[in-house]
Length: 360
Ligand SMILES: Nc1ncnc2c1ncn2[C@@H]1O[C@H](COP(=O)(O)OP(=O)(O)O)[C@@H](O)[C@H]1O
Ligand SMILES: [Mg+2]
Image 1: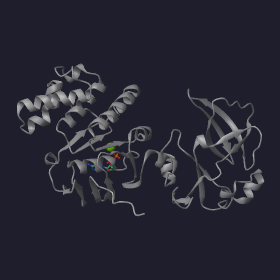
Image 2: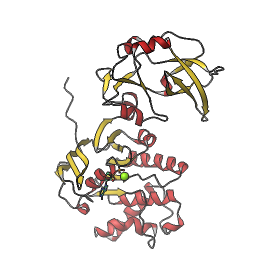
Image 3: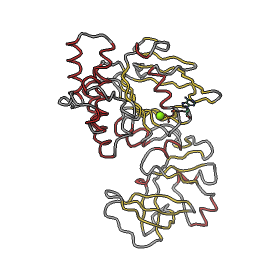
Image 4: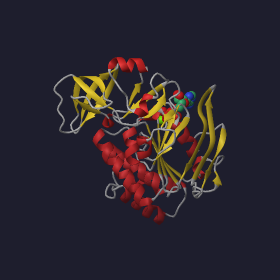
């Protein structure tokens, strides 16, 4: 069956951008579906903010176009795009009250006073700050200030809500609670949202779609589960997860034999090639007795993490981290490491997926 064509709410079509001779975005293409919460994820400097600023109209691209709800907005000035923006540093006006801050974008649009008042109340209620409209920003916590910034962005009833690292200035506890509120708010309002973050846990927990970027390119666009379970590259495998997937270079067949390792059939064919395995810490098992295809390993340390314990082991000269099950005790350093039967195999040189050959 041919899938129906995806409805693209926002189409990012071959956007390119350079600063001087440095290319920071290479032909970026992305379709954002209506109502989706999309997260642009990637390491610092990969071009996330540049792409978001281009979508917002704060920065011109060198090439490509942007189509929002069927309108080509590439040349439209920022203030005509009806896009709500939230940055890392709340950027509230300190001399204005919370309500005046939220009204700012509405005042600029010359809406009737009564409508402004109603929209400010609605936006403040949406972020659960209905009672604090008369305060000055300085009298609010960081989390509350960021919620004011979010209220200001949604008060204009934007066609798109763009957020650039909105939780980065908050401490860990607040970050988790504002994150939940942000997702709730999205689910109540249905505003199509694009958020930038470098924090993979944040991305996995909040997104409908995770768009992973590296060096100015989109390298994977998937659901949180899809990108976690079926990373398309060694980079994706090693960027997501805490701790991330172990990247384990395969030895030659003779080195495996010397160690006394008979790899699982799906792995054996890759010995001695340009291959590495991506092994999630929770997909590995440690035992004190050998199992078929287990790899001899040396237990160096067990790290207590509260809900989890992480075993640091070495196998064939490579460090690996194994997430231990709750009740497991290990009493000696010489252990056996059991791999999944069909781990994902990537090229050591290019990071491209070698096996399994097709998705799924
Ligand atoms: N105004 C600028 N002039 C020159 N280089 C810039 C400018 N802004 C960003 N860059 C460079 O572009 C690249 C992408 O930056 P950015 O989009 O801010 O990355 P991210 O948000 O993913 O951390 C980085 O290498 C950064 O140094
Ligand atoms: Mg940035």
